[in-house]
Image (tube, rainbow, N blue to C red):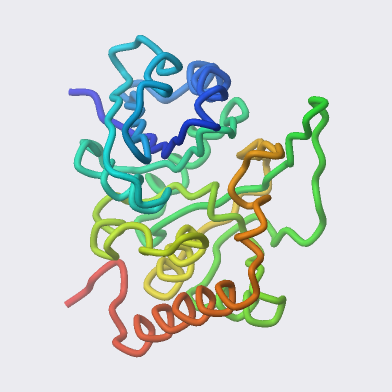
Length: 252
Protein backbone atom coordinates (compact mmCIF):
# COMPACT_ATOMS: atom_id res chain seq x y z
CA UNK A 1 0.00 0.00 0.00
CA UNK A 2 1.35 3.40 -0.98
CA UNK A 3 1.79 6.11 1.65
CA UNK A 4 0.63 9.66 1.02
CA UNK A 5 1.74 13.23 1.51
CA UNK A 6 -1.22 15.60 1.39
CA UNK A 7 -0.60 18.94 -0.28
CA UNK A 8 -3.09 21.54 0.95
CA UNK A 9 -3.75 24.66 -1.08
CA UNK A 10 -6.19 27.46 -0.34
CA UNK A 11 -7.18 29.39 -3.45
CA UNK A 12 -9.33 32.39 -4.28
CA UNK A 13 -10.20 33.84 -7.69
CA UNK A 14 -7.18 36.17 -8.15
CA UNK A 15 -4.63 33.45 -7.36
CA UNK A 16 -6.24 30.68 -9.43
CA UNK A 17 -4.23 31.73 -12.49
CA UNK A 18 -1.08 30.40 -10.80
CA UNK A 19 -2.35 26.90 -10.05
CA UNK A 20 -0.81 25.56 -13.26
CA UNK A 21 2.67 26.62 -12.10
CA UNK A 22 2.12 25.10 -8.67
CA UNK A 23 0.96 21.85 -10.30
CA UNK A 24 4.00 21.74 -12.57
CA UNK A 25 6.26 22.09 -9.54
CA UNK A 26 4.45 19.21 -7.84
CA UNK A 27 4.80 16.98 -10.88
CA UNK A 28 8.55 17.57 -10.82
CA UNK A 29 8.89 16.21 -7.28
CA UNK A 30 10.54 12.82 -6.90
CA UNK A 31 9.52 10.75 -3.88
CA UNK A 32 10.95 7.55 -2.41
CA UNK A 33 9.54 4.23 -3.54
CA UNK A 34 6.11 3.58 -2.03
CA UNK A 35 5.18 7.26 -1.60
CA UNK A 36 2.79 9.51 -3.52
CA UNK A 37 1.20 12.92 -3.12
CA UNK A 38 -2.47 13.94 -3.13
CA UNK A 39 -3.20 17.61 -3.83
CA UNK A 40 -6.26 19.04 -2.07
CA UNK A 41 -7.28 22.44 -3.46
CA UNK A 42 -9.90 24.26 -1.39
CA UNK A 43 -11.49 27.39 -2.80
CA UNK A 44 -12.22 30.14 -0.31
CA UNK A 45 -15.72 30.84 -1.60
CA UNK A 46 -17.95 29.50 -4.34
CA UNK A 47 -17.76 30.69 -7.93
CA UNK A 48 -17.17 29.35 -11.42
CA UNK A 49 -13.87 31.22 -11.82
CA UNK A 50 -11.45 28.79 -10.13
CA UNK A 51 -12.47 25.35 -11.43
CA UNK A 52 -11.17 25.94 -14.99
CA UNK A 53 -7.67 26.38 -13.54
CA UNK A 54 -7.72 23.13 -11.54
CA UNK A 55 -5.62 20.40 -13.20
CA UNK A 56 -7.46 17.37 -14.52
CA UNK A 57 -5.53 14.74 -12.62
CA UNK A 58 -6.72 11.85 -10.38
CA UNK A 59 -4.22 13.00 -7.74
CA UNK A 60 -6.05 16.32 -7.39
CA UNK A 61 -9.18 16.95 -5.28
CA UNK A 62 -11.02 20.27 -5.67
CA UNK A 63 -13.59 21.54 -3.20
CA UNK A 64 -15.36 24.82 -2.49
CA UNK A 65 -16.85 26.40 0.62
CA UNK A 66 -18.22 29.64 1.97
CA UNK A 67 -15.55 32.35 2.30
CA UNK A 68 -13.63 32.61 5.54
CA UNK A 69 -10.06 33.30 4.55
CA UNK A 70 -7.13 31.00 3.73
CA UNK A 71 -6.90 29.54 7.23
CA UNK A 72 -10.50 28.38 7.13
CA UNK A 73 -10.06 26.98 3.62
CA UNK A 74 -6.97 24.99 4.62
CA UNK A 75 -8.62 23.66 7.76
CA UNK A 76 -11.69 22.58 5.79
CA UNK A 77 -9.37 20.80 3.35
CA UNK A 78 -8.16 18.59 6.20
CA UNK A 79 -11.27 16.42 5.81
CA UNK A 80 -9.61 15.10 2.63
CA UNK A 81 -6.16 14.73 4.20
CA UNK A 82 -5.90 10.97 3.93
CA UNK A 83 -2.17 10.73 4.58
CA UNK A 84 0.39 10.83 7.37
CA UNK A 85 1.88 14.20 6.46
CA UNK A 86 0.53 17.55 5.32
CA UNK A 87 2.47 20.02 3.18
CA UNK A 88 1.34 23.63 2.74
CA UNK A 89 1.52 25.06 -0.78
CA UNK A 90 -0.11 28.41 -1.46
CA UNK A 91 -1.79 28.68 -4.85
CA UNK A 92 0.68 31.27 -6.14
CA UNK A 93 3.85 29.55 -4.91
CA UNK A 94 6.04 26.76 -6.27
CA UNK A 95 8.12 23.90 -4.86
CA UNK A 96 11.70 23.56 -6.13
CA UNK A 97 12.75 20.04 -7.16
CA UNK A 98 13.51 17.82 -4.18
CA UNK A 99 11.61 19.86 -1.60
CA UNK A 100 9.04 17.18 -0.70
CA UNK A 101 11.61 14.40 -0.46
CA UNK A 102 13.80 16.46 1.86
CA UNK A 103 10.87 17.28 4.18
CA UNK A 104 9.76 13.67 4.23
CA UNK A 105 13.24 12.36 4.99
CA UNK A 106 13.51 14.50 8.13
CA UNK A 107 10.24 13.32 9.71
CA UNK A 108 10.74 9.70 8.70
CA UNK A 109 14.23 9.74 10.20
CA UNK A 110 13.48 11.45 13.52
CA UNK A 111 10.15 10.83 15.25
CA UNK A 112 10.84 13.53 17.85
CA UNK A 113 10.49 16.18 15.12
CA UNK A 114 6.92 17.32 14.49
CA UNK A 115 7.36 19.68 11.55
CA UNK A 116 9.84 21.10 9.09
CA UNK A 117 10.46 24.42 7.38
CA UNK A 118 12.95 25.45 4.73
CA UNK A 119 14.68 28.35 3.04
CA UNK A 120 12.56 30.63 0.85
CA UNK A 121 13.35 32.66 -2.24
CA UNK A 122 11.04 35.44 -3.37
CA UNK A 123 9.92 34.88 -6.96
CA UNK A 124 9.73 38.31 -8.57
CA UNK A 125 7.36 39.31 -11.42
CA UNK A 126 10.26 39.26 -13.91
CA UNK A 127 11.10 35.66 -13.01
CA UNK A 128 14.21 36.41 -10.98
CA UNK A 129 14.58 35.20 -7.40
CA UNK A 130 15.71 37.09 -4.33
CA UNK A 131 16.93 35.62 -1.06
CA UNK A 132 17.39 37.33 2.26
CA UNK A 133 19.79 36.93 5.20
CA UNK A 134 18.97 35.65 8.65
CA UNK A 135 18.13 32.00 8.05
CA UNK A 136 18.96 29.71 10.99
CA UNK A 137 21.46 26.91 10.60
CA UNK A 138 20.37 23.66 9.01
CA UNK A 139 19.08 21.44 11.78
CA UNK A 140 16.61 21.21 14.65
CA UNK A 141 14.58 24.10 16.04
CA UNK A 142 13.96 23.63 19.73
CA UNK A 143 10.65 24.35 21.43
CA UNK A 144 10.13 28.04 22.11
CA UNK A 145 12.86 29.25 19.75
CA UNK A 146 10.46 30.65 17.15
CA UNK A 147 8.42 32.62 19.70
CA UNK A 148 11.59 34.08 21.22
CA UNK A 149 12.90 35.24 17.84
CA UNK A 150 9.47 36.46 16.73
CA UNK A 151 9.11 38.69 19.80
CA UNK A 152 12.60 40.14 19.43
CA UNK A 153 12.23 40.92 15.72
CA UNK A 154 8.99 42.88 15.31
CA UNK A 155 6.79 39.78 14.98
CA UNK A 156 8.90 38.19 12.26
CA UNK A 157 9.81 34.53 12.62
CA UNK A 158 13.19 33.23 11.53
CA UNK A 159 11.46 30.53 9.45
CA UNK A 160 8.60 30.88 6.96
CA UNK A 161 5.19 29.30 7.76
CA UNK A 162 4.42 28.91 4.04
CA UNK A 163 7.05 26.12 3.95
CA UNK A 164 5.48 23.97 6.68
CA UNK A 165 5.49 20.19 6.36
CA UNK A 166 3.81 18.66 9.40
CA UNK A 167 2.59 15.43 10.89
CA UNK A 168 -1.15 15.23 10.25
CA UNK A 169 -2.06 14.07 13.77
CA UNK A 170 -0.15 16.97 15.31
CA UNK A 171 -1.82 19.45 12.97
CA UNK A 172 -5.27 18.12 13.86
CA UNK A 173 -4.51 18.17 17.59
CA UNK A 174 -3.76 21.90 17.32
CA UNK A 175 -7.00 22.57 15.45
CA UNK A 176 -5.44 23.43 12.10
CA UNK A 177 -4.92 27.07 11.20
CA UNK A 178 -6.01 29.95 13.42
CA UNK A 179 -9.32 31.71 12.76
CA UNK A 180 -7.71 35.03 11.86
CA UNK A 181 -8.06 37.33 8.82
CA UNK A 182 -4.28 37.03 8.33
CA UNK A 183 -1.23 35.59 10.12
CA UNK A 184 -3.16 32.33 10.57
CA UNK A 185 -0.12 30.41 9.36
CA UNK A 186 2.19 32.26 11.76
CA UNK A 187 -0.20 31.32 14.55
CA UNK A 188 0.05 27.67 13.56
CA UNK A 189 3.84 27.87 13.34
CA UNK A 190 4.14 29.27 16.86
CA UNK A 191 1.68 26.70 18.21
CA UNK A 192 3.72 23.91 16.62
CA UNK A 193 6.91 25.33 18.11
CA UNK A 194 5.29 25.53 21.56
CA UNK A 195 4.46 21.84 21.51
CA UNK A 196 7.15 20.14 19.43
CA UNK A 197 10.63 20.35 18.02
CA UNK A 198 10.95 21.40 14.40
CA UNK A 199 13.59 21.38 11.70
CA UNK A 200 14.99 23.92 9.27
CA UNK A 201 16.40 22.83 5.92
CA UNK A 202 18.88 25.31 4.48
CA UNK A 203 18.24 24.21 0.90
CA UNK A 204 15.57 26.23 -0.91
CA UNK A 205 12.17 24.67 -0.28
CA UNK A 206 9.80 27.30 -1.68
CA UNK A 207 9.57 29.95 -4.38
CA UNK A 208 7.33 32.62 -2.84
CA UNK A 209 5.66 34.62 -5.59
CA UNK A 210 5.55 38.39 -5.22
CA UNK A 211 2.68 39.96 -7.13
CA UNK A 212 0.23 42.83 -6.60
CA UNK A 213 -2.77 40.61 -5.89
CA UNK A 214 -1.29 38.59 -3.03
CA UNK A 215 -3.00 38.99 0.34
CA UNK A 216 0.11 40.22 2.16
CA UNK A 217 0.48 43.15 -0.25
CA UNK A 218 -2.97 44.56 0.54
CA UNK A 219 -3.39 47.68 2.70
CA UNK A 220 -5.59 45.85 5.21
CA UNK A 221 -2.76 43.45 5.99
CA UNK A 222 -0.67 46.22 7.55
CA UNK A 223 -3.44 48.01 9.44
CA UNK A 224 -1.75 48.69 12.77
CA UNK A 225 -4.70 48.04 15.07
CA UNK A 226 -5.62 44.77 13.39
CA UNK A 227 -1.99 43.64 13.21
CA UNK A 228 -1.49 44.30 16.93
CA UNK A 229 -4.63 42.30 17.72
CA UNK A 230 -3.52 39.39 15.52
CA UNK A 231 -0.09 39.29 17.08
CA UNK A 232 -1.54 39.44 20.59
CA UNK A 233 -3.78 36.40 20.11
CA UNK A 234 -1.05 34.47 18.27
CA UNK A 235 1.31 35.05 21.20
CA UNK A 236 -1.34 34.26 23.82
CA UNK A 237 -2.12 30.92 22.19
CA UNK A 238 1.55 29.96 21.98
CA UNK A 239 2.13 30.88 25.62
CA UNK A 240 -0.97 28.98 26.77
CA UNK A 241 0.20 25.84 24.98
CA UNK A 242 3.60 26.17 26.64
CA UNK A 243 1.99 26.71 30.04
CA UNK A 244 -0.13 23.57 29.82
CA UNK A 245 2.99 21.57 28.86
CA UNK A 246 1.41 19.44 26.15
CA UNK A 247 4.27 17.93 24.18
CA UNK A 248 4.80 15.98 20.97
CA UNK A 249 5.63 13.18 20.95
CA UNK A 250 3.44 12.25 23.89
CA UNK A 251 5.18 10.07 26.47
CA UNK A 252 3.64 8.42 29.50
